Image (cartoon, rainbow, N blue to C red; front, top):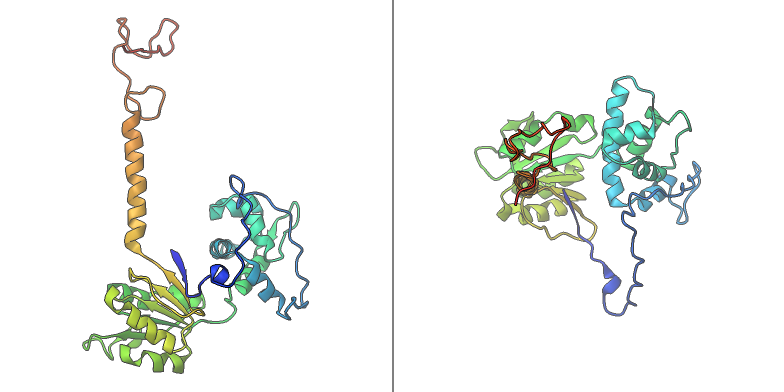
Length: 304
């Protein structure tokens, strides 16, 4: 998934001083353990008068935000199974990250856990939900009620996570007024009005690429602040709009690369006894089969 921001980086625009060159990072700066950040005391405003949660949210890197969403999913599952505490090692393994990176991510929340005990699952869930803005609902509109749009409109997991689908749109006259997932489909021309009336904050674009920009413009006109784009195009949006792009074909191509690389590695290892997947010859040239050297162990075969 790719994040597309409407804003441009003005640091290199005319009239501004050039940036100072950054120090080169180490081999894996993101994984390096860091000193704990001091927690922001509850109720203490930030430098600009912001609430503590707002101060923390502004300081969190985007990559860490994505991991926090993963931690929340894992922690919610643990909570449903009755877990009350979790160690950083247990949580990092379940989330698929190393423990140093996890502790760094959680330090942005002002949460460090207790030595020998770990983190309280319920407290950590509440902290992450607050930072991710999940303490209130975000109404969603789905545009393009084809196969993908139907699936998204009928998915029951969105409302329970604070993302109720409140509007559906399409151009097909046979779909207008037809309920999908209990919600009637409206015409795309009504996107700005309906989104404004219903307070839609997130728009999901599941249309063909030729219609995506026009749909995007209508969503923005209706007051939508964030867009999840499944169309394989780059949308042009104002600076205050956040866009997340999901290109399933690109994801499959990335997986194809990994499959092909593993196949090439396996093919390259054939015939090399020292590597996995190697095939040993039946005879070793001395009248003995492989695996029956003079000392009973495996005998090396050298081919000229």
